[in-house]
Length: 480
Ligand code: P5A
Ligand code: ZN
Image (tube, rainbow, N blue to C red; front, side, top):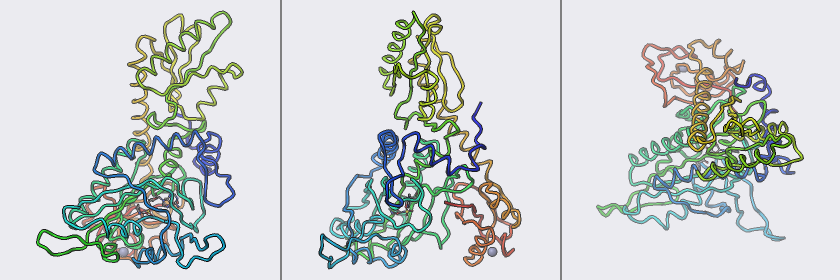
């Protein structure tokens, strides 16, 4: 039986704050608004998530770098669209000790400008291209919308930003497609279902030609942007005069892209899979993948512990992260609750009956289902169960997103769906900006954009708002 999700979907926010605190994933009690702390358990989850994205980037020709956190004001101002948006969100360093700085320094809100400033020195020739770098850093944004742990921070601590430079717009387009493929794999690894949409003009990244966004749907029916890929064209390279020498001896501005994710993906991971008992982690990000809980009885203690150790060694020998909970001042029942809260994928109970039957009892965290496994087959069976569990989690989450996506051509119905927080509306649109903005007003939600992962023929369809011929369909939802 899958634990009921509806219980907490109506008060998801409270559930989320409670579970990250109790499971010791994230501590949000620090006395600065919009900043938080990764305690040891959360840090381990975070590091596992980071290794997945690093591997995917390293395999696809990206190299890791580290740029300064401080960006001088004149450099941040070079690209006018960029600063126009970030103006409101920058934290400024204005003093050095008691001395007022002559040149204000920004705490990076993102690193396009810092990187462009150096690319001007690094990129000379067509043989230098393509250029692909990434860094995992903290960034600062003075967010004015309600701050939320992991979801809307003023100090984002797990900002993975990739930046690339290319000789042609086609190459930049190709990189955008590659980045989308990388993120698809990344979210699949984490069992997070996603929608890929091209953001409308008014909602693209500051300085971008266009923005492709990954959104997921949280249990409260609101969409959460969990990653973005931007084609920046020559907007930044012109402002920063980043050119390269072409084979024909002329110079041209490079074409750039950038794409980023943050700890929001960890919030999505927790929010989407967690239940009333706590976290539910896929094994690849779980700090502990299997916990062994002995159920000793008088006289059989020695045999039970001996089998526990045998199982521990067997699973360690195949590279699993296993923990034997041999605390003697805590009851087995209390241990069950504790490790369920922590989201450990599998629990193995070992008591006298298991010893006698040369078996162990395995419980899956996602379904709470119990499976009997023969001791002799443990090395083959446990990895299979872990993989099954992860596949089921991915499938269930994807299904949930699909069940909460509704196609309609009727405005009232769209309004109702969004109002009831039932999820995402897909509907035809004429493509006109004013019309789009009035759709957002009417439904009291946001246009996520045109789906890139959905085939819809709009021939014959009319715009939900103005009834003119539809150019495309769009996704609409309440958002974070
Ligand atoms: C792409 C990387 C950028 O900043 N520059 C470098 C580009 N894009 S973005 O859309 O503004 O941010 C990328 C992703 O970071 C997450 N994010 C946040 N997470 C938590 N708190 C915040 N305040 C915050 N702001 C952005 C989003 O998932 C976003 O898609
Ligand atoms: Zn219209």
